[in-house]
Image (cartoon, rainbow, N blue to C red; front, top):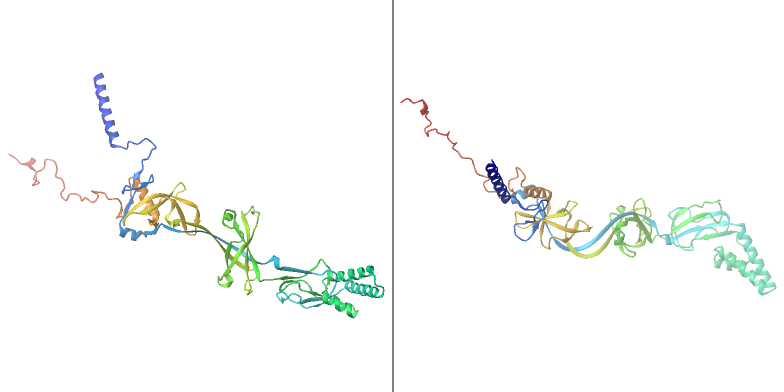
Amino acid sequence: MALIALLFHGVSQGVGEERTSTSDKTMPGMKMPQSSGDGSVLLPSGYAEVRIAPEVQQRIGVTLGVVQRTPLTMTIRTVGIVRPDETKLAHIHLKTEGWVEKLFISFTGQKVKAGDPMLSIYSPAFFAAQREFLVALQYSKAAPSSGQQNVVDTARQRLALWDVPKSTIEVLEKTGKPSKSLILRSPISGTIIEKKAFEGQYVMPQGELYVVADLSTVWVQGKVFAYELPHIALGMPATVTLPSLAARPFAGKIVFIDPVVDEMTRSVQVRVEVPNSDGLIKPGMFANVLITHAMGSGLTVPTSAVIRTGERDIVFRAVSADRFVPVQVEISPLRFDDRFQILKGVKAGDEVVTSANFLIDSESRLRAGGGGMVGMPGMGTDEKGAGEKPSEKQKDKKGAPADGADHSKMRH
């Protein structure tokens, strides 16, 4: 019995050694890199080289793109609303009080020039101030003194602080007749964008009467995301288009970046100043803003060429008319329009698959696992013996003569 057990152990050990010699001898959990077939590139683990006949490529829609050195331009797109330039706004208030007698500017949107009359007001305080100036002037002429001259200068200054023009004060001094009405004039040239005054209204200093805007330049208020902030700066050019103006481009520049990030939207307000000498851009219009940031040049591929698995990025390089090799690449985290920057893996001039690459990816993975797509002739690797036909003659039964006669029933 001991001898039989020893012989059985020797046979089992021989069979185990034979199986080990014919199987993969790598350590468990360890994957050896595969050659691409041309001896130059190591394939990513779990992938295999794929052969696809040209006619099959046409059928499944395979297209190729070229790895190129292109300018790296970060493009930031946002939308905004046109607003008046706040540095060129005038809010019209009265510095005294009284009743509106007449409106010279009677509707919103009316154009005005600096110095144009806007309305006239009857103000008892204004009338009394003129009388005080005339009385002080008469006493100064009758009994000139430095003290009396100070009173005259103070009365004149009071009228000037009410925005009474110097020419009006000079006429008052010559004629000695106080004016009943105070005329309010526009301080700037522009467009009336708000009108709150009407005839017969009693107005006070805190009441706003008009808002005048110089629309020769306007602001476009837009928002960009916080991660885009490194690519914008004050003074950077921006292109503004408006759907209502047939997408005509207007050149502007960034004049303000909000120092605070909105907590809800994680965005930052950006202000673009746009010249508007012809007045085509109206406050309230919607606008599209395009900001570009040049970042040099680099190797890029179309985004459709890169298969992003979450763990690695794969492209399929065309090494011949029917051979495609998977290559693991490293790409920049930034996206430049419809292209990715390639940091490692391929070189300029390489051709990569840009469409149908998910089909090729599936075939490559199946080939690496020992399978392949069923019913796709022309896809895969060359397999010898796959097309062998079965023998046309069936094997005869054992012991049956060639003539097929049953000799078992023949009698001697």
